[in-house]
Image 1: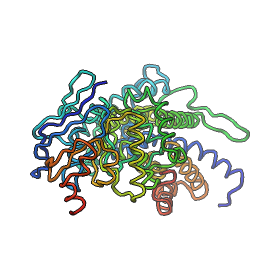
Image 2: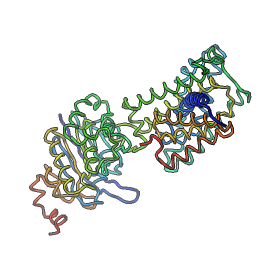
Image 3: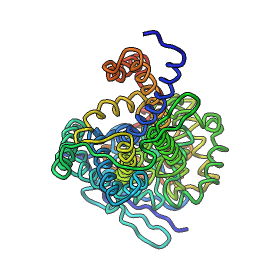
Image 4: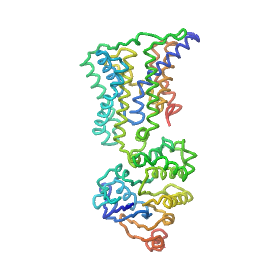
Length: 291
Length: 243
């Protein structure tokens, strides 16, 4: 039970990497749910789909990171298509779109899951690359390279999205669109096109997160269910729609889980996410970095 | 630059309720035209008809611009804004969770406005010094008067050729109303802006009007061809002063 300083250091270090992993799997949702208010529960399923596509490209000798990047334009188109369908069938028709939209996205998640089972079976799949089994030794610590990939992906996506959202006209319109659509029209922007574009970006980012997911560990078709709770937790904890907040919330979650894991054992770790969420929302309802 | 906005015989409403019964008005280049009337007489509906936010059931809304004629009833709000028609909506409608500067930059979304971004931003900050002080603050945290200034500045960022202002006095103290109207006059004089302003506060609106219309229950009841004309009209005396 006693936690030595050395052990704590190791827990924090591993927590940082785990936190980056959580941030990377959540950041697409931070755009689609956080900024656009779309109840996108199919987000983790799309990420698992991205992981399987990476696996498929891996069979033809593609490096998983290169595969993830190559999948981004395809997933962008997929995202635009999904949003367009959601808009035409649900959002356009009125104010209870939120609740019925939830059913729609659960449907999308199930279709993806069943599709993956039919195509690949229920066995676990993985990818191969030089860096996957190896570790980097820093002092007495050994950091697995696959977790450093998560670190890199999280930082890159956070930085890229933050810059895009604050320094481009479209980016600023994406931040504004859920706040007041008629007002955005008065700026000469079409809110539906803006949302469609943003959903495309969120989905493209999720493809890269999927590639990272299969680098970190093997995947199976129903893996998305594990991530629904955690990803929504990170996005809400961050304060809806804040990209740097998403990174910070991921880190907080990762470090706390890692410490709990080392002191109390693995069975308590899943409770950390929602425990944290309840405490934070009790104190700061707008989330840690929400405006 | 030739510019003329013509509203001819417009009828419009919400469901079974008709708010406008054949309204015809016109605004020429460089004019400030005021639309006077108490709440619920159709001023906002008329503004929304121009912006494509409410579709007229009868009548026409046309914009003549540099020799071309555009039928605004066939265009979307975005397309109308892209022609250079901007509106300061009633109730301010800012993006509350974005900063003052982000709100202003969103005003410059349309391509023609992006080209003039640096000049317009400098102009807005020079005209509204308070906004410069608060540029990094969230728009939602501003006072009512500051929000009205920001809404006005944001509309100027769209590089408008014609500006519609819907009820700038709503929710402001009398002093702030005076201040807002002063700013609109300053803009009009320095910018040579064409303005259509809907207002229920007669005494304030008349200060900047070149001419105006009085709208009662969705009909134009009086057309004043000058400021003096409006000031001396009996109907206005009856409606506003109760004599």
